[in-house]
Length: 244
Image: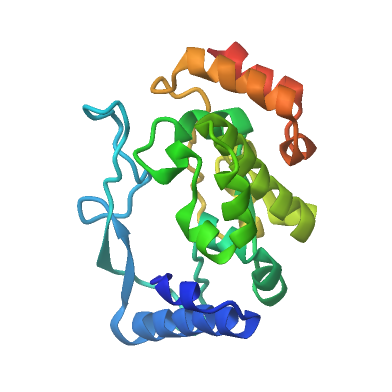
C-alpha cells in the first residue's frame, strides 16, 4: 500500500477512507484478474524480508521489492485480506482499532532490539520515520534522546504502550505463541483453511544476534522498565539470554 497520502492528512475520516479504498481496489483486482500487489523476494512471497547474512557494514539488507503475483481464492465473494504496516498502523491505532479488525503481533522485547541492531534500517538508529511523520509526539520523544539504544528502548515501549491502551488482550498475539502453536493461534485473525500446520522454529536466539550487545540491552531494558513489562516479565527477558 502506498502510504505517502497518510503524511498529508491527519483526519480519522481520511485515514479510514485511504485504507478502505485500498481494500476495495485489492478485492476488485483479485476478483477480476486474480492479481495482487505485494512485497516479493526473487518473485515469491518471502518468509523473511531481510537477508540471512550481514553485509560489509555488518547489517542485513532488505531483499524485497514491490511486485505483482497471481493468487487463487476458493470463493471470489468470500475471502480475507490482511495488510501489515507496524509503524504507520501503530501510529494511528486509535483510529484503526475502531474501524477495522486490528491485531498486533508482539515479541520478546530483547529479541526485538537484538533484531533491530542487525538491520540496515532506521530502527537500527532508534527511529521509525513513517510513524514519526504522523505522530509528532513520538518524533519529539525520540529526538530528545542522544543515545541510539536509549531511542530503541523508548521506541519499543511506544509500540507496547499503544497496544496496551487500544487493544483487548485477545487482539494481541505473541510471536512465541505463533511458534509454539505452529501458527494455529493466527486463526484469531483469519481461518487458515489448512489441514497441515507447518513446523515453526523460534528465531529469538538468532545466531546473527550479538550476545554481548544483548546482555547490555537486557540490562538497559530491565533498568528502564516500561509498558513491555505488561506482556513480558524479567524472567522472559532473562530466558532469551539463558537460551544462548
